Image (cartoon, rainbow, N blue to C red; front, side, top):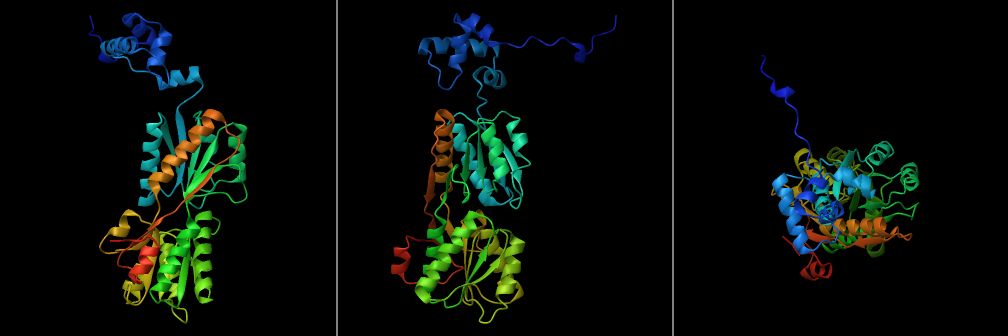
Length: 357
């Protein structure tokens, strides 16, 4: 008689919550409540259920539970440019905050220059309970699709000026631009410049607005300006153009650290100039690379941890109550003083709430 192949062995029947209920001497509904984040079960019953589940090697089926409760406990996180350390840190903090609330993150990554229209149908097919859009562009078409599906959205590190119906949390970018300008002007710089990110993003626009307003208020002049698209290559190209101007800028504020790093490499390696003796450079985000000795980048640190838990708090509130009124929060960043920019006097550093490293 031929020996039975292992692949032909009948599979053992999967253990269900009903099996656990029989072993523990409780109802199936009690077992479901025991494995639910908000379900109430007495301590004694919970202990019996956990012991029975361990003996039977039972694992709760999240998909089945979602079909019953009509809640998947999944939150889609749509994020741009995950390859940059700032976004990886933001993703980590969002995941940690979601997990603390009993949710799992479903990541969808895309280029920062693209709208999220293409990923929304895919996201909605997973029956997510909510969507967090982090540093990606939300189009009117994508927002309409989520509204039609009755799925709440919270924007992180971005807002849509034309649509006030979505909750959002991000940095106080106008204040950050003002701080950068005040710092550079107090250090004695006369010819300031700004490298912007993408033209239609609120983060870059607000940093530019704060920077230009403060420079104009204090000096009556307008900074030079180029666009770097939030990329290393863009920051490099923008710096080349700026450094060919007359007069040549003696200080540059970049809307992101990755553009600042690209600008510094051009200034030092291609043009043979010194940072900060010839040109001061300030970035934004306090990316991991900013503290590296080769860059030692003065930057404005976004409070990623606070942004993340506030975004999750807003989303869970809207998912639970369907609150009609959106919330908007803007969290002030902190100026981190390192070696890429000339230091002003100690009084200015203290007034700006800066931290010296």
